[in-house]
Length: 58
Image (cartoon, rainbow, N blue to C red; front, side):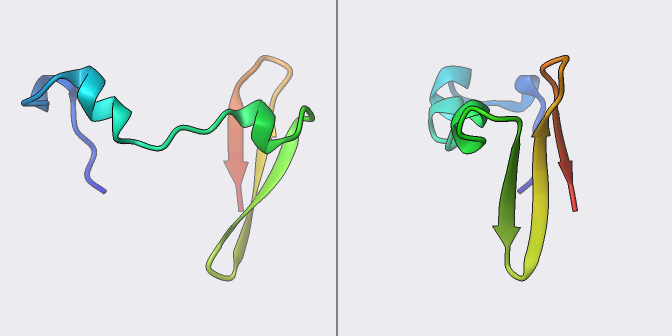
C-alpha cells in the first residue's frame, strides 16, 4: 500500500476512507489493553497505553 497525502486524493476523502476497513481497538482488546495480531507466522502485540495511544510491537 502506498501512502497518500490528503491533497493527493482525486475523489472525496470520505469516500476514500469508507473503503478502508476500520476496527475499534477496544473491541480488538475485548475491553482490556492488549491484543495479539498474527500475520503469516509472525505474532504482533497491540497495546493501548494509559494515555490512549496505540503501540504495535513484534
